[in-house]
Image (tube, rainbow, N blue to C red; front, side):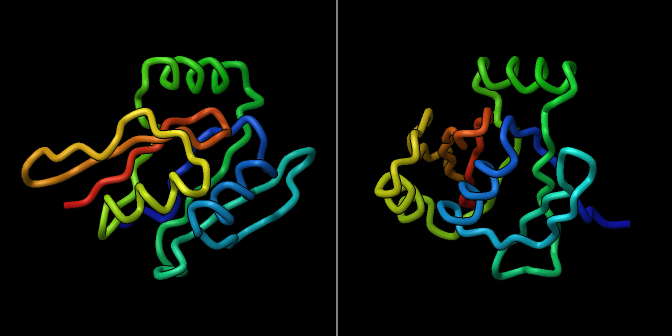
Amino acid sequence: MKISHNGIFVNDQEKALKFYTEVLGFVKKEDIPVGEFRWLTVVSPDHQDGTELLLEPNDNPAAEQFQKAIFEQGIPATMFSVEDLQKEYERLIELGVHFVIEPTDYGSFSIASFRDTCGNVIQIIQT
């Protein structure tokens, strides 16, 4: 068994696609109409056959409430691994990304967290 998809709720699928591809650098993998929404996934450009991130609409009231609650508490919706946290932080700052936690060293790993413009806090980690 392996993880094939990981989903996060987004409040605007088109805005999310733009952020995750144009800012974070992911590649669109699937874009299939499903009623008024889409089965919309992105992948790492270095692992295009790897785990897909599903950009799920938060149209369900429970999903919207969950997303809002963890966002307000600063809890990351998901985490991405980076090779050089400081370099990635600086790149994203130049692109206007709003960080809620600047790079912080915890010894065996370092983390930072930012807002994805679609209702989520996202954490990046360097181990």
